[in-house]
Image 1: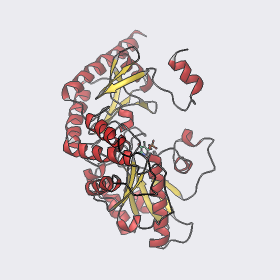
Image 2: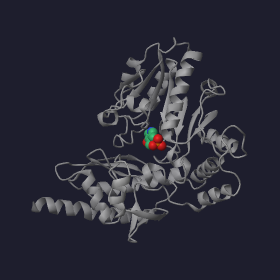
Image 3: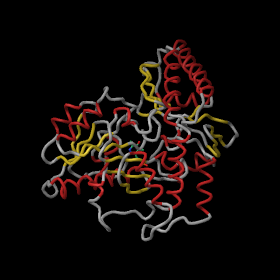
Image 4: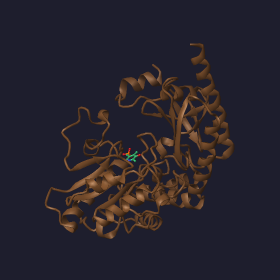
Length: 404
Ligand SMILES: *Cc1c(COP(=O)(O)O)cnc(C)c1O
């Protein structure tokens, strides 16, 4: 039985992987079981922004592995506080609550917003509303998929939690109209990743931030995917000079080694939590904290946001220069780029499979968008190599189309 058949038999079919079996990776490259090398232009949905097995992250992990790993938050450890202090310092937030996966940190944000609404804003019990956006992606828990607008994410999983209201993404007026005296928070991705790298209009977030402030509504930004340099700034909020009331981080925060997530907020918001209100057995463990701290330091020291901005601009321009009829649109900020495929020619899935055959790994999002989000350490020469491969792949598709 092949590995793929074995996985098909023993693993739940909740994913449809690209047919490659990876066995090791380093930096921007991964190798399959036959020894073939691929450029990783996917970075595990931005969890591997620092590149695979970054020596400093591996070293931080290994050092911590000889000291202390998991003790739960029943006790203090010497690693958690320095990690959280750094995260607060970089984000301009006051306090952080450590979790593991992104979805858990989003759930934490929702709990914080609701409790803040009852205890600080004075909303009547169980009446708090949270405004979210059409096309959102915040994770896969039942609460979170309950306010998704993607039918497949919800189908068969109801009933869902009430208290959420969707508005169009990118429309600040819609936010203003949707706010009621019962609105606790507006939860938003500064750029919608899973929805296809959707960039909102200029100063959208700034306007939303002003509307929220005026109405005493919390602005909570989900930067699980856009944070830590991905979009060419440390946080995507920085493009609009916005400091949200709550900030959610994950993915790259774990340095591609562990699941590490945080909900960060202003003191007034985080103060709603008292001992026993909320928790996580693994959240904030010293192994995660040691890696998380090093991941943050590396991001800043290596100027990864600045590099992402430069490389992203270059890559986008080179893609534009291809002038391929197969490309309908190129969207992106920094190294967070979506290429909309003209479905007259082919599907995004097909493009990903052809790219795989030529040594580039990425994954489609929806039917028509190919995502390019390589590790932020990628060089210009490596991007140029990727462009060559993309160019020849698109030519092949075009030739095949003409022949058909
Ligand atoms: C990936 C992602 C999540 C969910 O994170 P998990 O670690 O998969 O639970 C939430 N929000 C955004 C914007 C994401 O990209």
